[in-house]
Amino acid sequence: MKQQALVVIPARMASLRLPNKPLADIHGEAMIVHVWRRAVEADIGPVVVACAEAEIVAVIEAVGGNAVLTDPNHPSGSDRVWEAVQKFDPNGTYDAIINLQGDLPTMEPGQIRLALELLADDNVDISTLAAEIVEDYERQEPSVVKAVISMAPGERQGRGLYFTRVSAPSGDGPLYHHIGIYGYRRAALARFVALPPGHLEMREKLEQLRALEDGMVIQVGLVDRVPFGVDTPADLDRALAALDHA
Image (cartoon, rainbow, N blue to C red; front, top):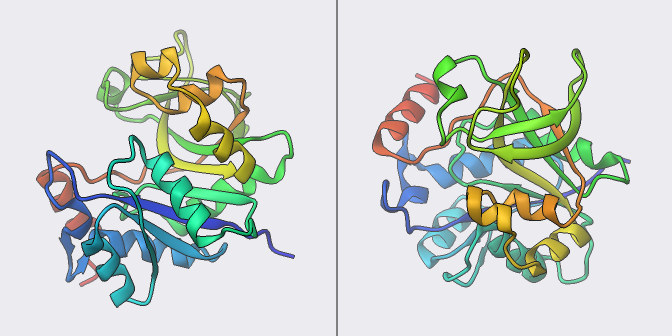
């Protein structure tokens, strides 16, 4: 039997650099609809958009999707996802939860499937993805989060040991660009959102460090391409070009 998951896409309108970001038009459809379509194409289970505002609910329901209105004041996307999980699946039907960022319209369905496949190991609490850095400027760019992975050459997955905004690890060898998608065991997500912010999390401004500080196991899978996030008008232009099917 194929492993099933609940895919949850958190979305909110409050973006300083790109106002009303989830509703940004990409070839006639809102960006959040493009992300929702990629998740549906992954075909690993139901997809629900966890919305901070009713406008996003309306857009998703208009294309036949599932949307849940959540508290607009959640401190993080993970908290928004957890509220949506409890509302959409109160009986705990789904043990695996995929948290897919709502600003990744070029995410490939196969990458979403990989996040679920990495949870097949019972020792793994959380899964996520990374790709080898090929652009030199990304090595020092703080906005590019680096995943430090215990992974021998030639392997395609390994234990996530740390995540950081600086260039790491040192020495010869590849660096890995972390990609913002997470697979959680349901119990791990419940445990995660109940934890106070970690010291390293607050220092690096990286939420996943809270899980590592609490001893959770994060498994990282490698993919060949980083799906870029849309945070600015320039990013939106890039997404328009990438998704131009004409």
